[in-house]
Image 1: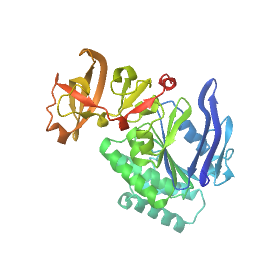
Image 2 (image 1 turned 90 degrees about the horizontal axis):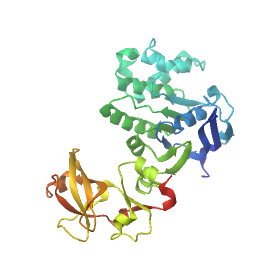
Image 3 (image 1 turned 60 degrees about the vertical axis):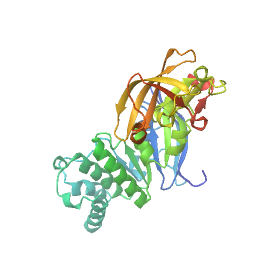
Image 4 (image 1 turned 120 degrees about the vertical axis):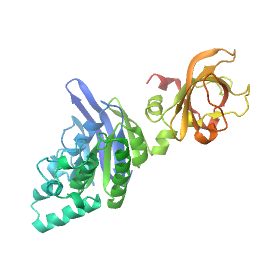
Length: 347
């Protein structure tokens, strides 16, 4: 990536005998919003702390704007950081929390006041400037945290699971607000999350991590539609795995494993012997769609142990009576099938 702003080369980190990061390398463009996505313990927060200078790697180098910062202390890296716990000072008002870091930079009172007012306006919280954190809702506290970071005019913004403590509605609202703010400011942003929906809706690119390594990098669409391993396919979104032997009538049988998303399976309007056969075992109403659990039937007309998830839109469900024990004929479009080689299956 020729226009890389942040470059990470071969970063590794051990804590005693435990390997937290193994030979991590990537590049991020200026103004890009990147999510580090992965399960708990995969190393994503350790990587964020190394970028911030809060941890030192055992090996590897970090460059920002072409300048090496690997050994620089946090104060010399010019980043803003937002923690999961917000980390607001309880004895300071919203205004004072934002002003705190600016005072350490020895700016004039007028400059501090201008920057704090701008930051409060960015997150639409001018009206609560004199309130203490205990007087603010969780959503308001969460908006103060990035405002405090942005007031410092950082080179890049680091977000460590900033929305995980909020309820679903507030979280969805703040996702949009953070994205709009980041887009307006054009600030390079790296966000750690284990929430795949958060990553899919917010990121320009996603870096999927597992077992101390980055296992796939791509746009949300690419990572979702074209996962490079069963782990990525299963971690991001719901998915069905079927062996080639179970699909011998549908595929060539050469692949060890095939995957298909629940929304990509089609119900054949008329029962057909050509399609895959299955019996409905459960139906969950999920608002705009129904998730149907099916038990597959083999070519001998015998129930198998294979269960499959199918998502049916509310519109389609009006035409198809979805009830337990009903038999359905299914079609798995070839263009929607994701195949994995045998060597990937055990990874």
